[in-house]
Image 1 (cartoon, rainbow, N blue to C red):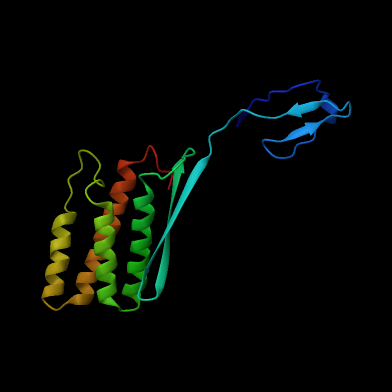
Image 2 (image 1 turned 90 degrees about the vertical axis):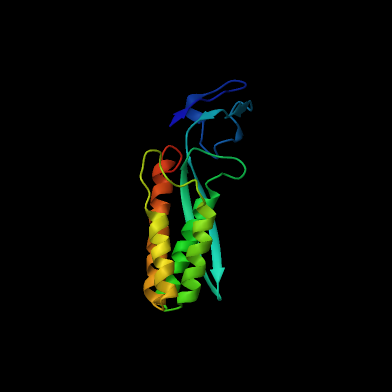
Length: 166
């Protein structure tokens, strides 16, 4: 981390104590020392949660750099929460909630998930999962939808790798 300090007044090396990153202190000669202007890159963490049928799951995204305001990758945190919730509901054999969570998450990522140049067969897998559900194999269809949703999240992270740490 590169640290640049701007000082106002007289500075005595032996007397400086470190407090907060942007603090104002006085040295023993009663003159003001101001610490400021950090040139450091840190990471931003986005957290989002989703609920279904009284159950809640959380999704997080770690981004390179510090962002102010709402990041476009907030939808990834929401999608990760949806996939975690879908996995919970699938494990509990609540297949309708699994399907709803997977569909909501797929919608949240929408079309901005596929890396350029990558052939994507997830649409076909979604259709196959929905077909299994229509045929009465709800558990199998719900599992296919959840796995396909997880593949799209992996694609999304790959597409936006310059922004996303994890």
